[in-house]
Image (cartoon, rainbow, N blue to C red; front, side):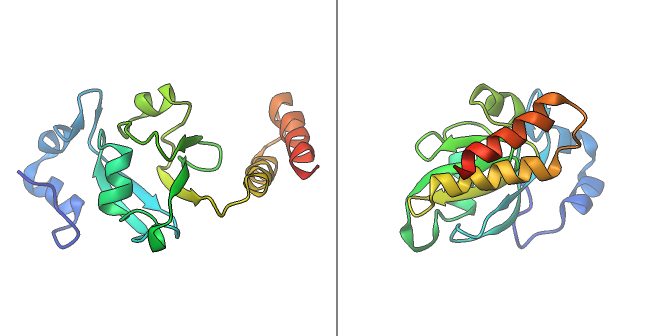
Length: 157
């Protein structure tokens, strides 16, 4: 039984036709099903793709994303949102699961994959991450309230 590709029926109709148990057999035993991943504009084929949990991040980058535009080299991949973490461009042989990504210091989160090549200024990237964290912090706890402000100040220096 194959999972529907880009030209096939939508996943919801597949589940209705084949049943929830068949869907639950997708993925890996402790994280079943699929995940919608969104590939950023630096990919050769940016967009949203539904993949089985457990698919390697490298396969997602290469097979679905087509690598980076203009053959650029991937040096870092932000995964799971601005606070989700980063994977080095040469460390993508990790399954797309919460557990496997956590072991690499990243989080699955919403599974947004933002690619960075050597043309990205690392200081600008850190400023962006800290600005996001400062804007999104509710201010209820000291680590976020104080830490994001301090991180942003350091990134701006």
